[in-house]
Image (cartoon, rainbow, N blue to C red; front, side, top):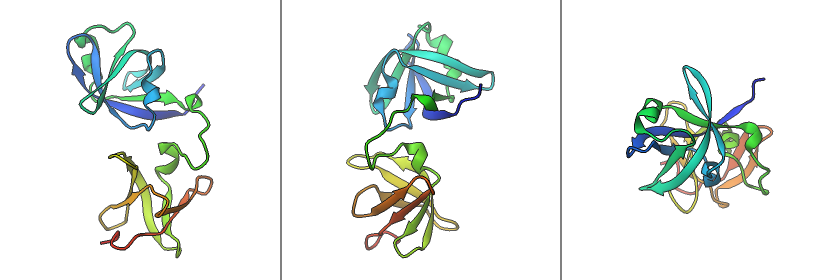
Amino acid sequence: MHTEKLKIGKIVNTHGVRGEVKILRVTDFEERFTPGNEVILVSDDGDTSLTIASHRIHKGFDLLTFEGYTNMNEVEKWKGLNLYIDKNQTEELEENAFYYHEIIGCVVQTTDGDTLGKVKEILSPGANDVWVVQRPGMKDLLIPYIEDVIKKVDIQTGVITVELMEGMLD
């Protein structure tokens, strides 16, 4: 049975000698890394289901260990590989809250109906997320996820309507 997977992070390095790996998080939910949770490691050799044994944050990165892997040599081969969860592991969100995978790929248009491009990634620099909109033949547009700018998000049609603030297109 094939189930859809959602990317939650990338293993960028090992940390120490006890099998800990450094994760670049691409999920908006830290709870994904709670000990006991199952994640899927995807490699050329196939998918491997792993159970998180420990989680901590160190210098802006998530550090994880997995049950049954207690040595750096066992996990070093995972550098550069991505971690996923099964899409069935997602939960219902409150109104006006969205999963990253629902936003990425959506078409962004202005309230006047002009198409700006598509959301290619989401950054989380601090107070609010920033949606990176890839524009054909132009540099990327950074749109803050704030009420003044994001006017409507329609996940069903894949269209996000925005009202740009002065200077945003410069």
